[in-house]
View 1 (cartoon, rainbow, N blue to C red):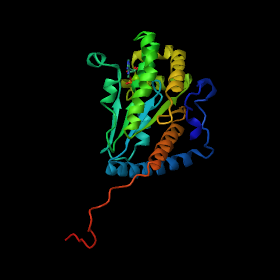
View 2: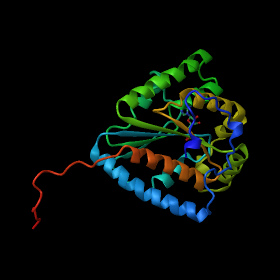
View 3: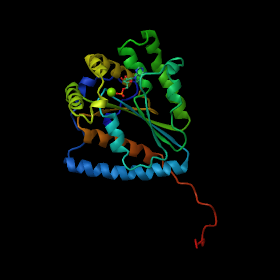
View 4: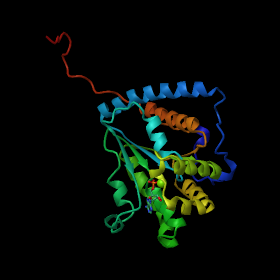
Length: 267
Ligand code: AMP
Ligand code: MG
């Protein structure tokens, strides 16, 4: 899974990555499903321990274009975890109140507290993506934000937050198929906005903005992973593997029970 990690300071060229590829997985699709099931179960136990230990905080950032599978990743990777101690924060276009503050204000309000896992569905990275591509702020404003984001994430990391950032990378053609599916399926149509087509028309500029964001903000304590995401099963597997590994690395200890429980019998 290491191969997906963006090395701090390295240039990122997304044209070198095939969104339809499944590197590191040669087995059958069925094996991937079985593996994900095992990871789901492991995550359930780890999350419960994390919550019990009440020490570390975990922040999972999901970024990607429309239809890249941010919602799907949340439902499949976190299937079975106890909602107690897990939260999703979705970031839409800022409200007037949010715009009256600095861009990290609304984000800081949503970061995980001790024992919690928080999943960001979009994030402060929109402020160097859509804000840049759609020219919502002048270049001198978004250009400063990479350093500001790095400082912010350094603060979170120094205060016991594990940060994992995933760019769900789909191809332009896969997006066409998925957007069309949304339009055609009455159950999914609510997710479609005409604005999605405008974003799509700026595809190449978004890719460039992503390359810069990934290159400038992948840190040892807050790495970016580029996840080839045309195949949903592979996307889920990669995110689950990396998350479970990061939680295992914390060597979480559930709290010691009260002393002198030996011989205590419940009648
Ligand atoms: P969705 O995630 O598809 O529900 O859409 C959320 C929309 O909010 C996307 O079009 C994002 O580009 C937009 N959005 C999120 N954060 C920001 C931001 N900081 N500035 C402007 N637009 C944003
Ligand atoms: Mg959308």
